[in-house]
Every structure is written in structure tokens, then in C-alpha cells.
Length: 353
Image (tube, rainbow, N blue to C red):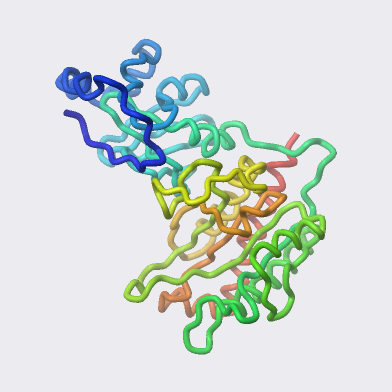
């Protein structure tokens, strides 16, 4: 039989009657056909068959070869790494077989459901086609008279909430320092900037996006530094989050949905992922850190945002080397410079003609 695919429960569709029998009868044929001829199959095989689609465990499965053809994507199977590469112009998508890990122009992005490889076909969940890859094939843009000029920066933690603490280092002080550095760079670039806090005060999580709304901000960016659990001190790298689409699994909890939404922040799903990607790409390309991926989560500050929003984890304070760098004002300025570049790239994207 073909490879076994472990699919999170939230990404599973009910198994149709007779499915196991169908798979066993076709197994030898499917093994012979193999993935080596995938790009040829994309051109030569007939349109999607209901019997093949019935094998997928994904909700509303979309056959990748049909989707690629519809969008003019060139397909190439990379057998060594068991990855599928799809390209069109300057866009490159790479899907890892039977995994939620994908790459968009070299930047790691976690899918909402696995790319399911069922020899010789591959499937994506419809929610990933629409909410993960859709905004890259057809980028969202603002109406002609609407401008993205006012950014609300949210320094994480504050007051009684110190965030991660090691020795005399407190995350709440470093996020405020980063926000102030970034605010200065953004104002130089012509943006209006509001901070949810300018001193060491405690704010409820739900209050932070409300402050952005009252200020009339066009974007909300929450700034944090990360920390690994005890015994995992070698974990390092940058992560960026946007809100999980309604009824989908968050990256850290595959297959489990505690609160499914939709939330106010979900009205900006297409903009959210492009904002998070712009910030994450800038950090990955400009900082000496590891790419831990663009991820989805239902953090309160993202759920309640009435404008496009993202949350940045700009490195691990718990890592001995990365932690020392983050404590260095010169390195925090580098982080701020990359985030400013990312925000300018996002502005150019949504303002394009």
C-alpha cells in the first residue's frame, strides 16, 4: 500500500463506505505509477476523479495538479526531499509530503492541514488553498482611496506581567525598547505610530487591540521575545503569528480546536497572512537567526483586532547566544530595521495599482 498519512482530527473528512477496499485494490497500480511522473501527470491525466478524491482524509480536498493547472503553476516533484515544487513567475511554493511544513519563496510557512500525498496524487485542504496560498496567488490590496499609514505597536507584557525573566532581564522591558526603536524608524519612513504602552504598565490582552481601534490604526503589530521550556535552551529563531482562520487548527495544536471562531480578526484573514509574511520574511533574511516559521494561533490580541494584525517573536531570550544579542541595543536596532522593512514591503503590496 501507499504511505500512511497521519492527519489531525480537525483536518479529517468522514471515510466513505468501501474506502479501505478501494485503496487495497488499487495499491499495486498506484505504487507502480509513483511520484516520479507527477509533472507529466499534471498535464496528461484526466480531470479529477471522484474515486481518487474519496481517498483523501482532508476536508474538502483539492487535488494539487488541478489547482496548479487552473493557476498556471509549473509543477516539479523533488524525490530526494519528497517535496513538490510549484512555480509561477517570482512565486515558488514548496510542499513537504504528508506534512504541514511548506515554504513560500524560501520562507517556512505552516499549513492548516497537511499536504496529503496519496500516490500518485497530492491534496491540499480547501482552507489552505483559500487562506494560505490564495493571498499569494492573488494578493489582497486596499481600495484606491484607503491608505495604510497608521501603525499600532504593542510592546508585549508590562507591569505585573514581566514576560520571560532570567536574572535581571525582563521581557517586558526589552519589548518596550524594541517598540520605541521601531516607532522612530517608522516615523522617519512617513508612518503615524501609536504604542499601546510607553511605560511599564499592565494592560489586559483584550484592551490592547481596542486601544489600536480607538486610535484609528490601520495595522496592529504585537512585539515579543520567545523562551523555551526548561531543558530546551538550545532552541533559537524567529516566529511570526497571524490569526487562525475559523474552524481550522492552530499550528501548536494540530487537530484540536478549543474555540473555532470566527472572531473579529478573521475578517482580515487574507491581509493578516500577508502582513505576518512580510514581517517574517524580513527577519529571516536580515537577522542571524533560524526560521521557525509563520504560524497560526488564536492569541487574544489577534482575535480581537479590528484591523490586520500580526504577533512577532523576535528571538529566544532563553538561548545563551541569542539571548545576549537581544540584550544588546545594537542588535535590537537590527531587529527594528528589519521589521520596518517588512512593514514598508507590506504597504507597497496593499497599495499597488
